[in-house]
Amino acid sequence: MTDLLEQPNVQVEPESAESPALIVTPAAIAKIKELLVARNIPNHALRVFVSGGGCSGLQYGMAFEGNPQEYDTVVEVDGVRLVVDPTSLMYVGGATIDYVDSLMGGGFRIDNPNAISTCGCGTSFKTKGENSAAGSGGGCCGG
Image 1 (tube, rainbow, N blue to C red):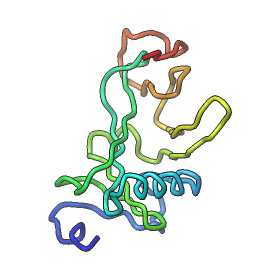
Image 2 (tube, rainbow, N blue to C red):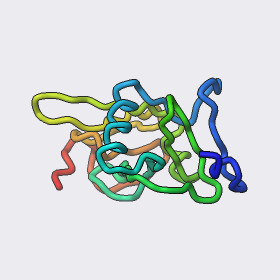
Image 3 (cartoon, rainbow, N blue to C red):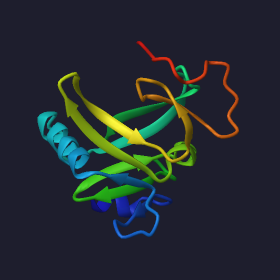
Image 4 (cartoon, rainbow, N blue to C red):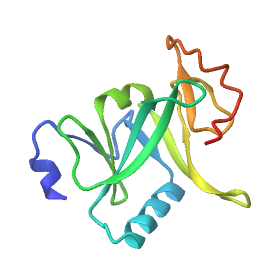
C-alpha cells in the first residue's frame, strides 16, 4: 500500500473525512475482501467508474485494478481500497456502495445522491442538467 502514497497526484481519502468521496457499507467491504481473496489479488483496489450508456444515459461500472492512475481519488475503508477518476467522481461523489444478497441474486448497489432518476435495474442513472434521449429512466437495462 505504500506505493499509493508515493505516487504523485493520487489523493487518499481518510475514513474520517467529513464528506467522503464514497461511503462503503460493511456488507460491501466484506464482499470486496471475499472477491480479492477468491481471485488471489489481495493488493488490488476496486475501481468505481461512470460511463455513458444504459437506458438513463449514464451507467456504473466496477473493476479490480492493481494501481490507481494519476489524479485518482483513493478511498480506503477497513483495509479495502476503492479508486475513482475525477470525471466519475463528479457523478458519484458522496454515493454509498452496498452489497445486497437476495433470492434473486446478489450484487453491488449504489445509492447516489447525485442521481435524479435511475433505471429499474439500478445500474443506469441520470443527473441534473444531463440531457438524455435514452428514455425516462423507468425501464430496465436488460443486457
